[in-house]
Amino acid sequence: MRKILIINIFIVLILPLQAQETIRLVDCLQQAELVYPGMKANSFYEQMKDLKQQLNKLKWGPQLNLNAQATYQSDVTSIDLSALPFPVDVPSPTNDQYKATLDINQLLWNGGALKKMQELTRLELSLNNQSTMVELFAYKENICNIYLSVSLLQQQEKIIELSKEILHEQLKKLLSGVEHGIVLQSQADILKSEIIKLEQSEIELSNQEKSLIESLEILCGISMDQSNRFDDYYLPLFAGISGRPEIYKFNLQQAVVEKNAELISKRKMPKLYAFGQAGYGRPGLNFLNNEFEPFYLVGAVLNWNIWDWNQNRYERESVLLQKQLIETRKATFNQGNELALGREKNNLAMYKDLIAKNMELIELREKISKTVAKQLGEGVITASEYLLEFNAEKMALLKLEINKIKERQAEIKQEILLGNL
Image (cartoon, rainbow, N blue to C red; front, side, top):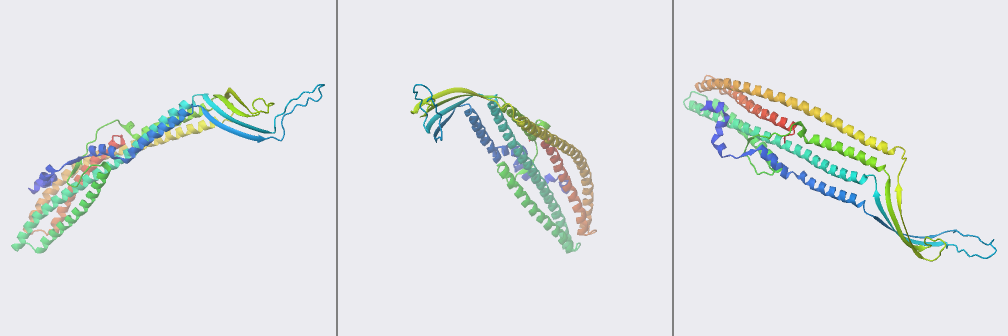
């Protein structure tokens, strides 16, 4: 019975586990996308985009301005015709003048700047949404780490449960020996104290597991507790290195920079406006008429800043330098990601080798523990000597389970580095 338990630690709790529900990692990650608070930001970004585009469209609409003006001039235009042989009366405008106008301006052409602004607004929305995806990726990576930590704690708890069962079996034999005067009571007490230590470890591990599971509940929005199993690590395979959301974000940042550079170039293009003005004042357009009268005028204006001291060129070069900076960050990220991916591949190979050695070690430790258990029952060795070998066997079992978890952790980290979340 004991030999079977040591070879496969899961057999200790085989019947209870059949009734336990498994919490799958892939379900946690999928549900996290639905409950992640940051996803709400995308709807706000969408609304902001719509508002910006509406504002851009309004720039094509006519601009109306109401103006009123009252002035007093120290001098006005006058014509002296006193030298003529006959009298001619040419009235002069009054010193106090009044004018109220309604001005309308309509943009006819601005070199395509407004079109570029609309394109930039759409790109900014995509960039903001991708920033949310980068945050979500980190959020899901955290869930993976917590899930694996819970799984490791559960394996440790199983090993402790196994160890307690074995010690209880040995304790029964020792107590029988104590009753027959073959074994000292102190030897049995040593095993009892070791069982108490294991129970203390159980309490600590259970508390850690409870805290981590509560964190998973909040992060994933899934009801779970310590009766659930956390040993389904399956992750679907996706795109590869280009699947990392950071890469898409870098690409969108560059696209935004390029669009800004195009917009700056468009600002240098000439702008054509149509305008009209309707007003009422004294004088009107006829400045020699001192009566209040209505007036209007219409026309077109071409505005073109043909020399800006190279300001436009410097702005464009400054923006394009940002693109090079983003390219540098992207290359740095790719390099770091490739190095990390290489490390995880090496770790995966290492853990496979370690697990093979762990299995060999456990087989040897099993033989040693079987021998010392018999010696303890016969009184040949002390309980302390037995515990040294027993703990060595328990540590070998623990290292095996730790390495199994770390092997899967290395596989999951590879998926994360490839963008497969």
